[in-house]
Amino acid sequence: MSSGSIVAAAIRVRGLEKSYGKVDVLRGVDFEVARGSIFALLGSNGAGKTTAVRILSTLLKSDAGTASINGFDIAVGAADVRESISLTGQFAAVDEILTGRENLILVAKLRHLKAPGMIADGLLARFALTEAGSRRASTYSGGMRRRLDIAMSLIGDPSIIFLDEPTTGLDPEARIEVWQTVKELAQRGTTVLLTTQYLDEAEELADRIAILHKGRIIVNGTLSELKQLLPPSKVEYVEKQPSLEDIFLALVGEGSNNDTGGDDRATDSGKK
Image (cartoon, rainbow, N blue to C red):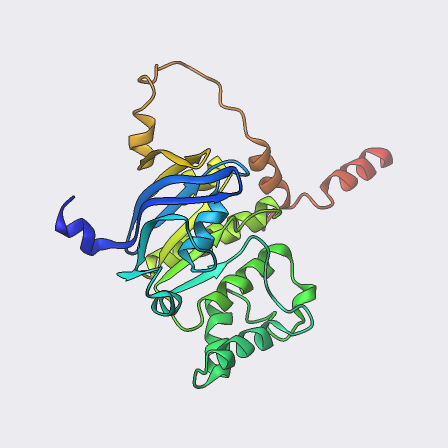
């Protein structure tokens, strides 16, 4: 490993282990995440993804191994680690009684930041929530709620953000909204560690993908590197059919004129 890779790494994990009784959840996990990149930890339910994130965010202690965040050891520098990161869990942690703007102001005040109102307004604009800012969060769609949740996690400008299965339970449109938000985070220089069980999500977002299986990283690389693990593809003519997601977005996406078209045609044909 070169000294350059050590400097570039925002997250370094070596030999991480965690067991619950006789169940070995993590069994020697190793990986690195480069600064300003999106790293996907891909695995099925129960693979250990959330456990790894909880350890790295200092919410849980490992049984063995080491990890550093922004150069701070998670075991001895937990306070410094927490200053560097933000964690967004599987379910949006917004207060539904408060408006979107009030949620952001509350977090800014809890972090003892100056001008919480200005911070809130800036984040509402950044996440395309300005018009909804005065509405209670309980009225938000799933995608809007998740965008607000991510916006709240960015207050204080953390350099690293953990997104633990951020699109679980979201509809196709909301998933795409969140994907765009994650891409914009990386473009602004934020390091993103993303856990997911969705193959298309990892393929769409990640600079590097590590597959966690039964507590171990079984492969780690870029998408092109992972594709090289399989035999070379054969060139064949295949008629491409639209996916169900393509059909759904074409019918309900912005600019679609299909809301009443079917009824209008049926009415017109009935008049003839």
